[in-house]
Length: 259
Image (tube, rainbow, N blue to C red):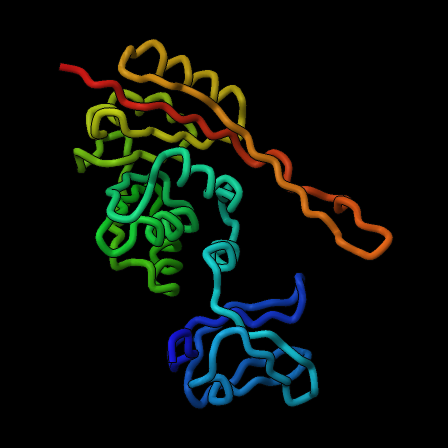
């Protein structure tokens, strides 16, 4: 049956917005929480989207993990690229199945995983991380969620040079992205995108200045995406008190053809 939970499948065990878990199903093992025990054997062979009751009588939902679920579960030991921003990066930069994408820095591997899913088995992600501890952590995260087949990881400083060429996009989450403007142009296909994700406007200003002064980039623009959830309740629907406001600025530019 398509969409069936198997021994080894990742599942999203959902109780409520604050209590939910990503776990890998293993035959003979169990999931434990303070709301009861779920036997993985009771899930194997059943479809995603089921409701199951723990031994103590609490009902849980069992879903296939979404890219957002996986991204959040990778942790936030560095600045993360939120789903609202990751989606904008994919669409604005035209990153799709079959693309070859250079990324830096890898961080926790959250955006790397989203990029890897987007380009699919025929595409490839080349990701650079200068810090060895972050490189090892990201490698562990990507292996945990089965996202390494189309990813090449380098424990290297991308400012020393990009190994690839003729790529479809360069996605940067660096402290000094303006230093990579010329190198990114060298490896990009003409008319394809560089993307720079930065938390501060000062970084954006320096990046846009470098892009403009190089004379090799067109259609330079910077976006910020805000997100707020709406609490839908009969007679009292309103926005939530808290929203996902500023997370980062996304600067996009297209490589101009040069002789």
